[in-house]
Amino acid sequence: MKKLIFASFFILLTISISPNQIFAETPLDVYMNDFYSKSNQASKILKEIETDLKEGSRKNVCSRQREAARLGLLANKSLIKAFKVAGTEPPIEAIKSSQNRWESILNDC
Image (cartoon, rainbow, N blue to C red; front, side):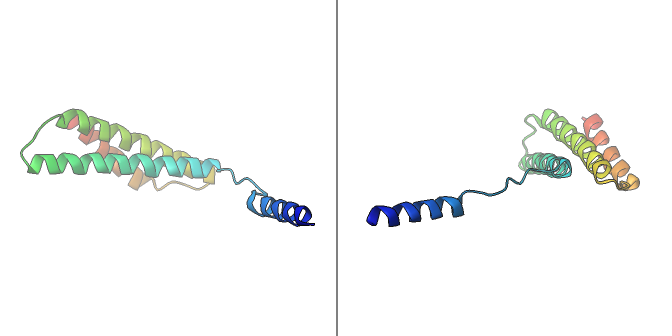
């Protein structure tokens, strides 16, 4: 009897814990996650550069600045793809402004 109760409990626990459905990311989620990830990385690098410059250190500033700009440009591309996947028109002016800012950061060093 104890074995039957234990087996029933184990089966019930297994069924309730195991996922019934797998939630896959949609292409929109993939592109938006990529956009947020890359833009956050780029912003973090720029903040680190700013802190280093305030402290008087210019170590690897240009290479890190270029890396941040490359990440920012890739983030913009992911954002455009996300809008296309969603079937909506991207805010062209805002994206172009961001694109120009990242390109100026890339080219200024």
